[in-house]
Amino acid sequence: MTDPVLHHGQIVVDQLPPRFDLVAAVRAHHDAGVAIGWMWDLVAHPRADVDEHPALTVGVNNGIGILEWNDGQKSHVPATGTHPDWSEYWIAGLHPGDVPPNAHVPLDTAYAAIAEFVVTRTRPTCVA
View 1 (cartoon, one colour):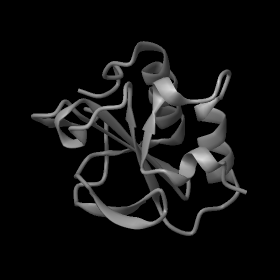
View 2 (cartoon, rainbow, N blue to C red):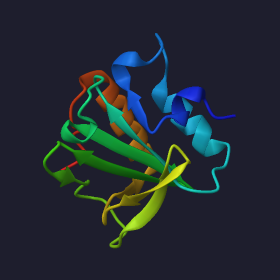
View 3 (spheres, rainbow, N blue to C red):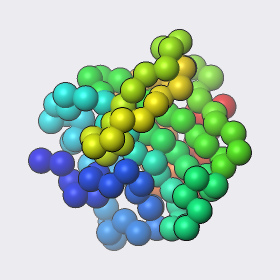
View 4 (tube, rainbow, N blue to C red):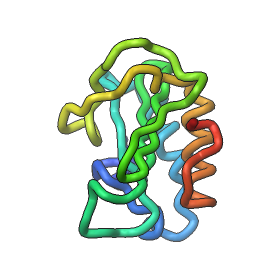
């Protein structure tokens, strides 16, 4: 069963329940077998201007992760990312969303980026 936190397209790290392990929740969701690619925007703080502040987009699907950092002005993907074409994942499994080229990464890289963002609230080092 998917953790209710993952039913939201935007996850505000500062509003996660105490001691909530976001990496474990995303890993459990993936390991349960998702039929489509799921993705979420992770943000540090709640803000009204959703599209104008930094966010880490992270997703999982069938053994693959995705990462994209958007600083409000420009989008960044990992320098080591793969998949040369645009692809489609589903925001919290509900609405289609575009994934830019070269955003695909190994799952462990996606999980590490989530863990780093939860701690630092800044762009993960693996995203160029």
